[in-house]
Image 1 (cartoon, rainbow, N blue to C red):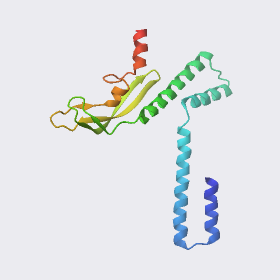
Image 2: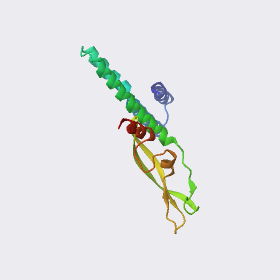
Image 3: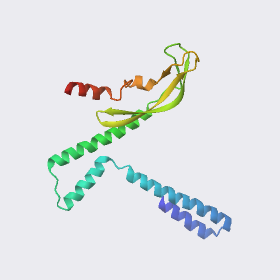
Image 4: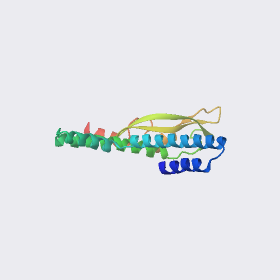
Length: 171
């Protein structure tokens, strides 16, 4: 990207365009540079929790602060769980929802009127679920529904089915 931008800059100088065109191209060039900077920042933020943990561990080792095996195992496990929770959130967000669904009380059409956020405790940790909130279009019915909650078996709970199962077995 940077090479392409540099070529564009050189071409502008070589062709000796009129000042208006040069100004417009310069603005485009600066916008492209800003976009490239933003991409670089996003790349840094995209590092996984495991990668971040590995960097810290390497720095500690390089300074002779050798961690205990137990600390490495616990740290990597926690980092892996955080990565898993982020991935789960992303997958949950990609589950499609129907625009219109039938009301389970009066069989009229339900329509999405809002998006609701729900924090879910899963085996991987805390994750966020965004889902459509539906309302019956029949004014006499006024039924509401969150079909994604039903689909994912998290209706009236903030725990994933597996986290409830494991909690039930241990408690």
